[in-house]
Image: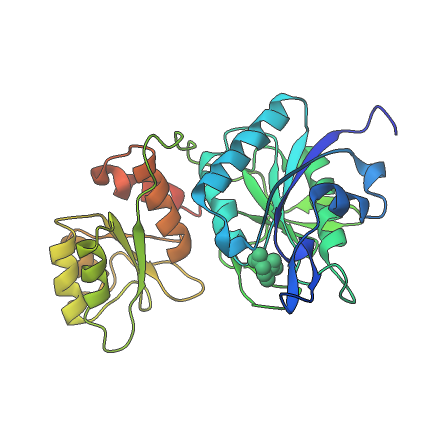
Amino acid sequence: MSQSLPVVAVASLGGTISMTPSDAAGGVVPTLDAEQLARSVPGLSEVATIRTASLRQLPSASLRYDDLMETLAWAEAQVCDGAAGVVLTQGTDTLEETAFLLDLFWKLPAPLIVTGAMRAPQAAGADGPANLLAAVRTATHSDSAGRGVLVVMNDTVHYARWVSKGDSLAVQAFVSHDGGVAARVVEGRPTFFHAPPARPAPLARPVRAWPKVALVTAVLGDEGELAELAVKAGYEAVVIAAQGAGHVSFGFAGRIGELTAQVPVVIASRASAGATASQTYGYVGAEIDLVRRGAHMSGWLSALKSRLLVSALLASGVGAGEVGEALANWSKLTRQ
Ligand code: GLU
């Protein structure tokens, strides 16, 4: 192995990329560790010197905040110990959330990259090895620095802030709608389409237990009872995946007015792309009314990511009164 190869630290957290069939379970379950994953990738040892760690072996729906904060500390330690970049392998079901959560705290210029697979290793056309190879190649490339946490899937590089899982099972599952993809990996190297985007200052590490923040989807005939129940049950903030550009029914709007006196309320859109409005619609339950009632609009940030941002802010000791400003910073789509 050449000494001049960059070091890339690879950690496995579980997910389809690591799953093999189990007769007892009747389907695939996470079994492979980081070393096995790295060994399964043809040519990986020619791209980088790989340092592996098997941190978790979980389906990604069962990853918890503590798992991710420990992973973050491990990733930082790897960079401090000379790694040019870090790659995490995990399940794709929550990848758009975990990558963004890590992005909120990632303060190093070195790339932290999250990848996974849509097809398990024994399936025809398994995509895990190709994704891991593309992720490591991206981790070693100088253009990847200073872009925060990146997601590499299907030879496409996404920003953690704008990526979403747009398809439950397809290999081309991940999309970056309005933020746009960061790069494509072509002939073994990432081609970035723009200069690194402006990034808000990373959040301070949590200083208290993670709060429960509710995510409630507003639906036809909805009067907002679930949002009210969540606050009564002790949820410390509510994010509403609202209709269209951030709209709810007359009844729901009334409840939001009462809830904002108690907890931060964020209005995102339940649509898969686009921003919330700020100054277009004047009827009761539309954005102008909801902001007057004390709610914050999520701008370009999705409902899923808004919930994580509010959770992380409160966990980091940011007061409820500062949630609106932080949300405005993280939801800007402008480039530097
Ligand atoms: N489709 C998921 C995956 O790609 C299932 C399991 C998980 O998210 O851990 O990994």
